[in-house]
Length: 204
Image (cartoon, rainbow, N blue to C red):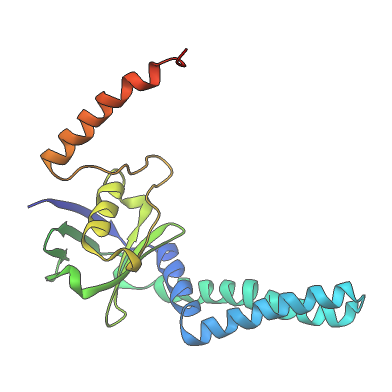
């Protein structure tokens, strides 16, 4: 059975990124984003009509939605998390073909892949949601060389529409790898067969 094990320690920035995403993808958050985009359109419309006072009012709402609120949320989360025990604890995640094993100093538990409904990457974190909106949060900076292996495991065991993760971490990409020996041989044979065609010149 294939497995990938990684140890992570949740940090304040990762938790803040997760909470901002969680809030802005909720019903209220989506409504705020829609209103923010509407205000962007109204700001542009009033600028084109040279009604700059009204444009400034709607621009203020845009700043509130896209700048002030995220900064406020981030500061609040950082303040709450600074004294949290979760920041002091190392958690081990082992990704296996039959699920994900989570181990802490006090407890351990295993969840099958079917329990996870979404896998998402945002900025410098990967998180996996279950049906109860609980999440495994993985800071990308702590995954190291295991990043690609973990992402491959997620893509292999979760439905494609549920996965929204970048397949590279800026240092290495993920190439498709044949899973069976027969597929690998066919891939290699096909490559060998095609190579002479590249070297052919135009027919006379």
